[in-house]
Image (cartoon, rainbow, N blue to C red; front, top):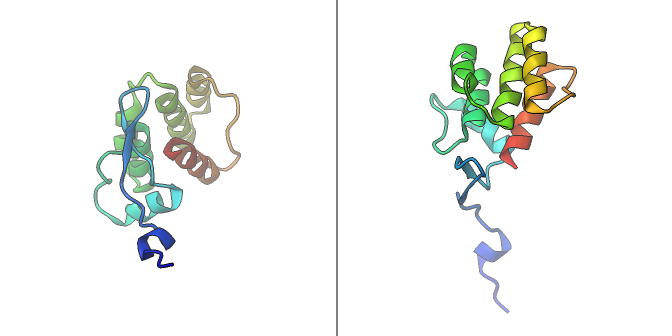
Length: 123
């Protein structure tokens, strides 16, 4: 029986879904493919605001990342906001945003936290 190549090796489609906040999320992007987009000059279209903030943070633009989540009143936005203040060195401010996000735990290393946020927000 002949099985088409595409069934043996499916090519991921850029399908999208909308989360409960109406933000577009790509269902096939994972943390590794997200990291590959960091080679580009602009973030890929369709990222949620918290994920786009993490993209700009990884590119070294903390201020732009912070501006994106500064007034975002969602648990995901507040979690990224907390991470950014922790990275800035303002632990007291980070603790405030972690509480607002409903989170009591963060990774010991900033890089580990960034990776966990990306992985969690893309699923």
